[in-house]
Length: 369
Ligand code: PLP
Image (tube, rainbow, N blue to C red; front, side):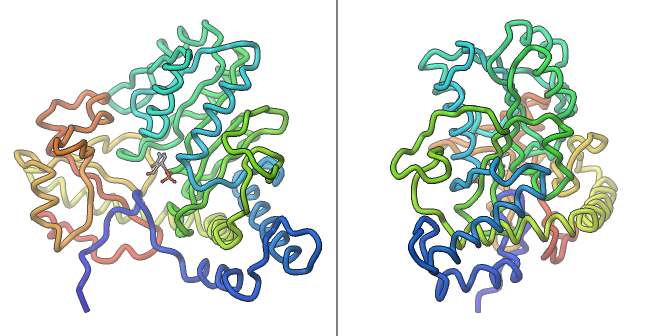
């Protein structure tokens, strides 16, 4: 059998937890019913499983189950939230505030909305990745429709001050959406206390299956649906529900809720030890060592090296990603690290490693020298 490289890219995706797989299995075979079938027991069993999953997700973020809409994952949820709200156009507002370091799922959606008449402000961040508060306050004076700021960044792990951002948005009558893809199940989230109006998440980042995620939409917020046909999920997202995926997402959320604190403690210890050892080498600089960030991500520079070359040359040993995105045949420096003020040379030498809560086999600095 082929020996696989050491996997250190858990922010990209995770394996399925065996407990999650076990919970899902019966819904592929004997409990295969359609959750929308109302005339028989098979449908009822599937529907009960969906409602259990909805409750488990809601419990993780202190939401009500009816405020959870299932989707194929965060990209779809982001499109649903941003386009759906823009099209419903409460108060005829057309302005959205977001940040230069958001994921492409947000930035590309905003760019598309600009083409159909939205006005978007892209906030700068400081060298720690935190939004420019003055710019934010100034932009809020235009009374935007929506503020869209991510919970934790996927390249650096940097956490924004979500409660403060949300409270400020509400003072101007704006709604607040957060992309919590990298924070959901990893740090405690309370949508009520933090005044979050909409929040997206994906199962495959927390040891659930790929192709399932959701959007929390606070009661009372009206979104125009992207997908019509059948009126499933209150008409917001039609189509037969992915019962196995929802069962997996629910179980992954349940496990995350009970194990989150211990997992975070272990990951922090492992990452900090790893970064301390890295820093003994003069060829390494850790990006954002002192920043407020989730404990699962480390972003560092291999001074004098090209990160893409390093990753390709070491592909048989280790699976990691650079901060750069491959665009056609051109490797582009990371726009996130650029926004933090890194020079192009620092940027192209940067690597992200990301840890999981389980299966962090062999995290050893010898992998990098
Ligand atoms: N937002 C962030 C911050 C992410 O890290 C990702 C995935 O990497 C996404 C959105 C897109 O998530 P999905 O793959 O579930 O569509």
